[in-house]
Amino acid sequence: MAYKVFVDGQEGTTGLRIHEVLAGRPDIELLKIDPERRKDPAERAKLLNAADVAFLCLPDVAAREAAFLVTSERTCLIDASTAHRTQAGWAYGLPELAHGQRAALRHSKRIANPGCHATAFILLLRPLVDARLVPKNLPVSAHSITGYSGGGKSMIAQYQAGGDPKLDAPRPYGLTLAHKHLPEMAAHTGLDNAPLFTPVVANFYKGLAVTVPLHLSQLAPGTTPQQLHAALAAHYEGERFVRVMPLADPDTLAGGFFDVTACNDTNRADVFVFANATQVLLACRLDNLGKGASGAAVQCMNVHLGVDEGLGL
Ligand SMILES: NC(=O)C1=CN([C@@H]2O[C@H](COP(=O)(O)OP(=O)(O)OC[C@H]3O[C@@H](n4cnc5c(N)ncnc54)[C@H](OP(=O)(O)O)[C@@H]3O)[C@@H](O)[C@H]2O)C=CC1
Ligand SMILES: CC(=O)N[C@@H](CCC(=O)OP(=O)(O)O)C(=O)O
Image (cartoon, rainbow, N blue to C red; front, side, top):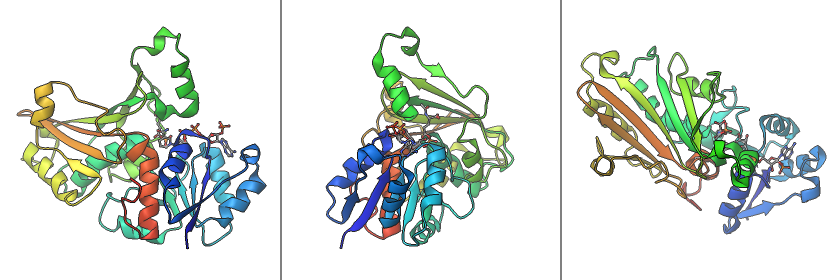
């Protein structure tokens, strides 16, 4: 018998992509809401409670409302929004996070998927904090460059309308230094404090890269770039969707520029360590709509259902 799956927010950027990914799967029956009634809480409640798995691809307020609408014990919610990412009772939807995370996702009926920037940041830092190479109390900075699809339907429309020369150049944002991903970046790395985080959105559709500069003198005494790289490689060994690239990746260095879009149309995240004698630059790239959103959501569903984790991805 097929699993019943409902996407609340089926017309949005993330919801549409999840629909596309699941459409061809014989083990999934997609429940569809009448487009005219897609914001009607009573109609949504009916479908949410009929589903084995319901994806919430909604603004935060509507995602919180959806969680309240669910009364059925069988419905597993997978929330793509920011609403529940540090909330008790919700498992964090990053299977590669740490030992035991897949078991948590398998057993929880409430899964909060990470933000796109947060996914890349946490993939870089968590293994290094766990290995005690990066001290928990280190003040960390992080930068991100992202395609405009990360801003959802309204930002996509703004960029694609054309005619505004201000959108031609990259635009730093998050200038209040209070980006919505900061709480999860601290909570799921084990760092005492959130990073000073500076995202930049630019005029390309999708693709994202987070970079984290580190001074070796601030790390555990004697830490080398080789040790940082080895800790990442050991943590992600055998992972299907996280690839640790060679130390000071020769291909990237030969080209001279970092390709932010090289994971597009995949559910992969690529992890890099660049270094000189005294400094390290960690980098992680992914497709903000793939491992940063719909790919991660489908991967979590697969883990939860106990089917092949890469099905459809
Ligand atoms: N884009 C990305 O890279 C990522 C996005 N996310 C998160 O996923 C969630 C969805 O994002 P995204 O797909 O980009 O957003 P979009 O703006 O593209 O889509 C959101 C959808 O939700 C619908 N919606 C709004 N309110 C309600 C409601 N009360 N009931 C039912 N439907 C409603 C909207 O309707 P309408 O069509 O009328 O606008 C729209 O179709 C957000 O929380 C976002 O933060 C997470 C990771 C990455
Ligand atoms: C370009 C852009 O605006 N990107 C969004 C991130 C989208 C995302 O992954 O985060 P959520 O799941 O938390 O929405 C931002 O920085 O707020």
